[in-house]
Image (cartoon, rainbow, N blue to C red; front, side, top):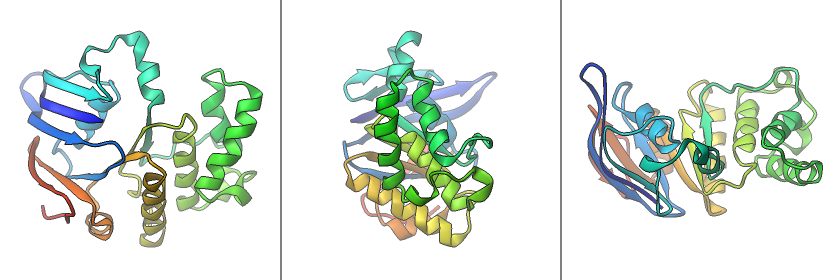
Length: 226
């Protein structure tokens, strides 16, 4: 499903964010990508969504070499990849349901499709009863669930969660971790990018560890050891 083939990324003048990184992630896997700030995690995410291009190497998703992707093809790629960031970026004047619907509206989805999809994804993330609440009326964990629901509207094959629990307490962190596991069990490949030791150790799934832009370990059922 995802192949990083000898990827290097250098920013001017000579800052090497990733250095000869190679790994494969199979369809349906749950992988935690860990490392401290500045180890290359953010660059890796940017390469996956074609926001950046590597200096060397290939990134292949589902047989598609996205290092050669045309700008016009990027929206198609991003519909296959849902992304959840630490910053919720919810529209404060829209309800939870309206925030989710907006992700479909900007892509030109029909009203009938929006009416079908929005309740389904809110049900998946456990927010059916909060659909008509505004972000200010939701807890931090509930706001992050809205963000995850928004990322699921296009039924992505891959969900990238980039520090999704960075602003949450331990209880809400556990809730989001459990939700990501449930989404993975529905067949979505999940990449959790984090430096949160507790959530990684709790999941006990595959762990790729980055340090100074290199993969320093790849454990099939690992822990955060850096």
